Length: 141
Ligand SMILES: O=C(CO)COP(=O)(O)O
Image (tube, rainbow, N blue to C red; front, side, top):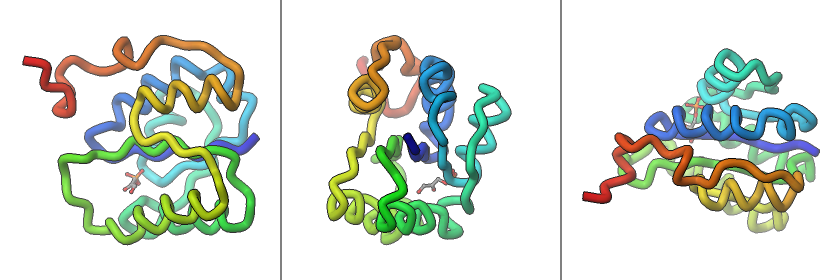
């Protein structure tokens, strides 16, 4: 099973926590990541990752090419919906090719949890437990 993991900067802490929570199951997979996401995951969880270029430098497109070639079984892409990305066309291309190839995609922690449970048959903390209360994406006040 080959799983792609990508997170925008504001969601990288959440991605590391997610990877840590599912380290046993993810450790059985080949993990493909964009550059900085993979650096954080490998350094902070010890999981082995196949790092591509950083997202703004073409990493999303490299992973998109893997999807097009049938080489990715699922994508967890924790996107930041509140910050404009200079490489937005690359992000759209990656999500589009996942739809073309019918590859399951999760773009937030709650759906990431379901994706991992569905693909890997694991259970872990629910998304709320992983989300940092200070996350700018969580404004419950
Ligand atoms: O920008 C990204 C995805 O669009 C993520 O790239 P990095 O993991 O290199 O930060």
